[in-house]
Amino acid sequence: METMKAAVFHGQGDLRVEERPVPEPGPGEALLRIKYCGICGSDLEAYRYGLYEPGIVIGHEIAAEVAAVGPGVAGLAPGDRVTSNDIVPCGECRYCRTGRVSICDAVTMPGVTCDGGFAEYMTVAARALYRLPDGVSDLQAALTDPSSNALHAVNRSGLRLGDRVLVIGAGPIGLLIVQAALLAGARRVFVAEMNETRRCLAREMGASEVINPEVDNLDLAVADLTEDQGADVVFCASGSPGAMASTFTLVRKGGVVVPVGICEQPVAADFLSLVMNELDYRGTYASYDEYGLALDLMAQGRWRTEPLVSAVIPLEQIVAEGFEVLLQPGAAAAKILVRP
Ligand SMILES: [Zn+2]
Ligand SMILES: [Zn+2]
Image 1 (spheres, rainbow, N blue to C red):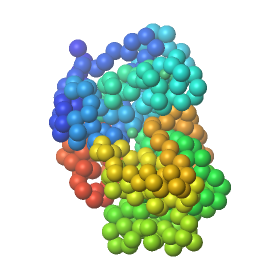
Image 2: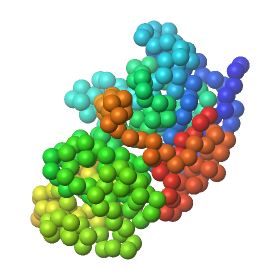
Image 3: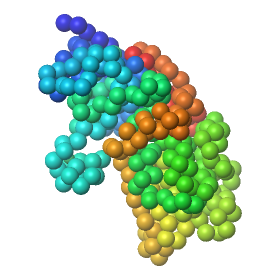
């Protein structure tokens, strides 16, 4: 039996690179040779809190090449460059049927509910794959998933031309939301971030003002920038309970708050402001159709991902140079890609 190296999740704080058999593509599946797989904030949370089933190969932000196809797969051939949607929807539940695919009742998520991409090979339903447009590199394509999630967050927000936007947290998703908000017509995007490297990246992605909330009072800074109104739309791309709780006073009356960060702890929330100021609170989770949009924008040169790549590391170093680095408080790194 042919074997490969894969990063297997064994529970809280326990991820090991092991030898696994190379999987066989079943009916409707493709076998992928992984070029890059990005470490996602959700992988970090799962590692920190032990959220996934022990024994699975994690990783879902992939760029790959088709190595083989299973029975019944048409239109894909070995050598095709692809990325995979991290959601394989059931296609039948009420949410799939009404276009709310990211909240599908019976979703399969490679790297979350079944084996994923921190490995030399993985199998995935061929219907989840997108062929990479010419001119989109494998490295760029490895950020299709977070790009798509950022575009979905902005779609969920209903952001309108001329809105003033605040993004809290300039990790990969926050940085990509800056870009998506500007594409959607934001007049100005303000970013709150404690880490200096990430603040520089936020400016590079087009933020007009970047605030360090450890130095400057964020409420006062945002009031200053918005004639005491507050931001029209606030995206909270930080998983910290304090950041989540702060959103209620940073948004203007009648404004929209979109919590994006994964926060495991309960948050003390200011429901009085929510009621009195008629705030809209709109959760956003993963994405679906925005994958094709993200790839098309990359192909047109209208979507940048390279500035976010802080490091490319070998699979063997996934814990020491990947997870442990990103989990340090105040981590400067944005996206770390694993190259199996
Ligand atoms: Zn992800
Ligand atoms: Zn469904």
